[in-house]
Image 1 (tube, one colour):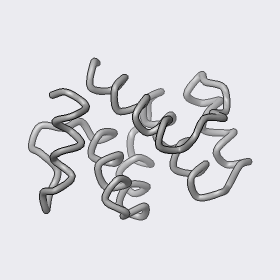
Image 2 (cartoon, one colour):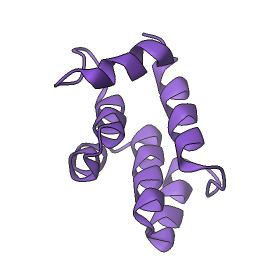
Image 3 (cartoon, rainbow, N blue to C red):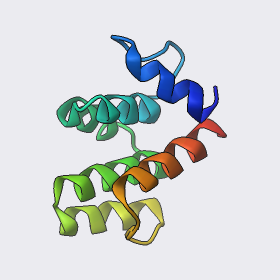
Length: 96
């Protein structure tokens, strides 16, 4: 799946089948359901889950919690626009 196909899927009522949990979390986030996104992301115990979790807490405005999750992901705290970070994460995770 490409990032454009992923973005088009946001017009659907449910995420496309076969997505990894971290992509499902980002799908829910893009649909405006931060709570569903967070529920999914917090159950993924790896660096990708931590990266998505960090992004979500950054979006929420909780910088200290975001810092913790960025460290767990092995990444620096993002400074780019949130939509740019979302696109970066989606692109990276679709290529895994």
